[in-house]
Image (tube, rainbow, N blue to C red; front, side, top):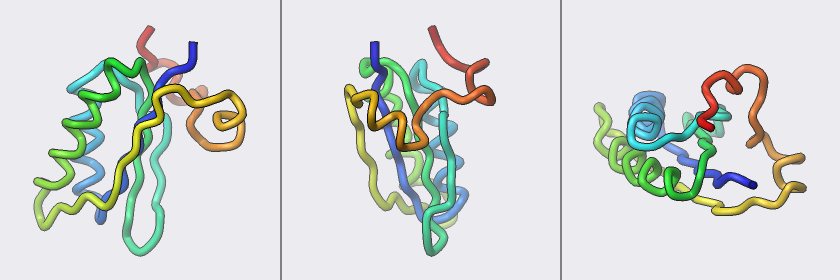
Length: 104
């Protein structure tokens, strides 16, 4: 069964760290990807059941905006049921690094 994907993009590291922390505490989700986007923007990607990704994303969005100093959420998106071809092309799959943290 495909799992939902949630992506948050922030301006600056403190905001993405706050978002990632809030997301894993708010739902049974796994961080599958983190990267630097452009111009100081950071992205974090989570996977899990849609019933867990939605509240985790809400917590992450709120935390990113409140992160000091001047936390700023740039954008976010949830894909409830990504097709397999999307997973094979984009870095949203479970790697060996994160597999140990995967919720079953």
